[in-house]
Image (cartoon, rainbow, N blue to C red; front, side):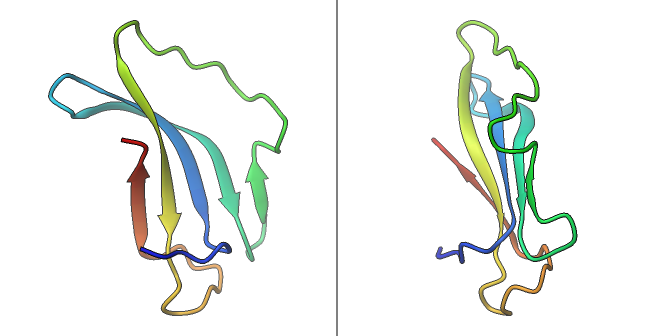
Length: 86
C-alpha cells in the first residue's frame, strides 16, 4: 500500500485479548486535509484525556487511513484502511 501524505488519518490505541481479538479501541488524534475544519483534533501539543490499559493487556497503536490516491484527494474520505502496530 502506498498513501499520499494528504489523506485523512485517525490515530488510535487498541487492546487485544489472548485470542487476538480487538477488545477496545479509542481514537487519540484525528487529521483532516483539504476540507472544512482541516487540521488535527485535538490540536498538536494539547493533552486530551488519560487512558488506562489494564495490567497484562496487550495494546498497540493503529492508524485509519483514507486512501484517495486513485482519484486525487478532494476531501473525500474513501477507501479506508486500518493499519496496526502488530
